[in-house]
Amino acid sequence: MRDYERVYKSMNAVIYWSNTGESLKIAKYISEKTGYELCELMSLKEKTFDDIFLVFPIHYQSVPKTIVRPLKGLKFHKAVLVLTYGKMKHGDVLNEVQKILHDSVVGGAYVPCKHTYLLNDKSFNEFDKIDNIIALIDRDSEAIFTKQKRNIFAKILPNTRHRLSVTIYKNDDCINCGECNKVCSHIHNGVVDKRCIRCLKCYFACPHDALEFELSPLLKDYLKSQKKKEIEIY
Image (cartoon, rainbow, N blue to C red; front, side, top):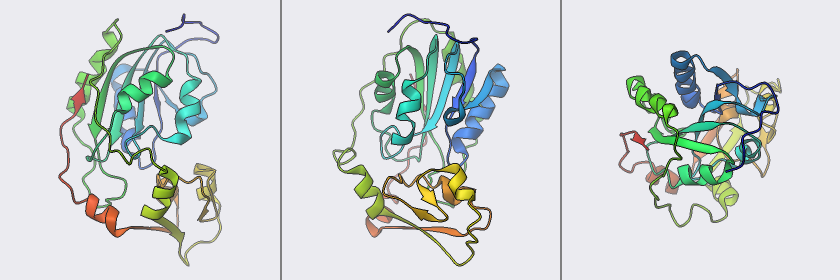
């Protein structure tokens, strides 16, 4: 851990990255309970903080590639990680994030939420349990996260697996309004490029319901697996 340097005016913050809105709802709740400023990770102008909560979703049992560089740029005194996932397997992402960040992580949690690809899944509503996560920010010692197993295929050609598992396409309602372009640099007027991680942020942002997605039979079968329901707090 390096020495904490106040390069800019310091503050407490809830920093989030959200695609479907699940992580954003939890980030807003934490912000309201703590009074910490709510900040969107990709829009940050200031990168130095006092205490922070970091809230974002896990993708394919890993840190989303899109946010690795912004995470590396953060400076803070101490942080609590709040990682959301679609009630399946979360892998070892708390330890993964702890290695990416330079400063002190004093706590963390895996929070099962509505799965991105299951549109009829129930949205997260157990906000009373988030209070126990908020209390972690009062710790002074570095958190130790239990090592978790990750699927052996999680790190094998992830972009290729994403493309084979989830197809995103536009329908006849697309008017080339460009709204999807604003939320992601990997889509242009409904057409995704090879760097797309299938987070579906574009799908949920489209004001004309002009984007659709289709899951592979293998992924559909996987999503029928038994779901995890309990929040894990460290």
